[in-house]
Length: 280
Length: 326
Image 1 (cartoon, each protein chain N blue to C red):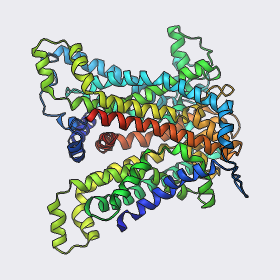
Image 2 (tube, one colour):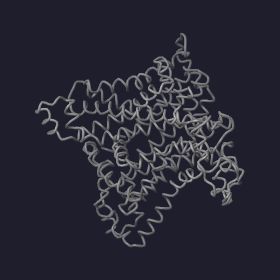
Image 3 (spheres, chains in turn purple, yellow):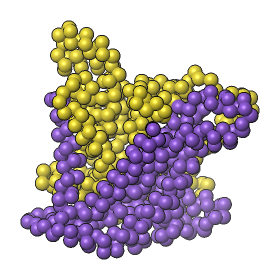
């Protein structure tokens, strides 16, 4: 019992208490110093009418919708590549996972340098191929900025999906494929009839991890676009951070956080429900 | 390097199998089982890829695909050795004739000195790793080896905490850390990182202890060993892989974390490396210097790659057992 005390204490103080405290603050006009009053649902009412926050929700949903499928498809293709026991597979697996290990923060800084007009490598290469002009300023146009961030994120996150799907694929008994081959099934037919159905669980899991990750996006936008141009690439978390730490509207920011916890909780709960149902 | 990494993945696959065993019992068609079968099982689709030509095609294709993920990062390492004037001017083929340490020299001395920030990052990451591993080991030991009232509640709380994204509690946490005088404190940041990494760590350590055969713990008890001396003398070698996994995750998380460090630290001299690079990017110290930004990013990247390649079997093991929990 004493053994678990430190863990319970740390988790309670830094995770569970803030969670409850956040709900409490969201019903007040909390200032950083001084007294406060209960304001009932006032923060939630202004939340619904906060056009900047609503815009950030829409933007985050749009961003999530753009990156989720490419991450799954690229990750699936990579998993097919590295799941075998052929020579080289383990090395390819390691290499394709490195962008995820290095982290999006570092890679965003690098991307900022390489996306500069005239001096960045991205324009150098793409201008040679003839796709863009060498003076294209990626990070100052909304569409181009979103494109750049999304390509970076797909490149960064596919390795994780690869690892999760690969583990699932390797759990499928090899005999299934052998009997399919005896029956004369093509590679594609085996993939569609055996791998995909048996991989549903792993696919659901990797989808949920990437959807939650996209929904909580902050670093790449803060570093690469600062939420701009204007506020066009401001994500939900960035919106919360701005409200709480730039405007110092702690109550409203807490209400936004509560909304975020509920959404992420619903996604997680949906995942458990889905997986439980699969078990039966 | 090629052989080293290939070799590392083999034990990784084997190591992950026992980790998954207790989970597998409950969830028969879970993914972890497969990691074990990697070596020594019959070829997945015998015949389809037997020929030499197919193998060469596989190696060439696989190398090209891998290059997509590694070449950009390697390219940035090369770029970080170019003089700043080359980094920010129109690129040309001649730009590689003179590679220089100038960016690193500038970054590690003078106005943009980031040695302090690298040290801050190391302190926080190492502190988080040690603290997480220690606290998670104790909790895993308690949960797995001793039946006590409330064990279920404790494990439930840990799993609940696992589901809370820290981005969503940042604001109340900021208020709380402010009141606890833990803002602008590397120790405070490390404590928070520990809290965030603990649920996963406790989960991994509980599984590690559950795999220890009952006989071993019983024998230690019969010999009169106290729980703590049994942990140190008898159980230690058996749970070391779990400890490594826990510490590795905590270290990499703390080394790369950005949002919380940005929020909880406002004093430049306490910034961790990822936060300090924002100043470089924004040109806080005068004009924007992309050469410095690149060399700083490379410094941030190197420990991740080194630690991962050296310890990837522990990483993959944790990934698969963590994924199973869902």
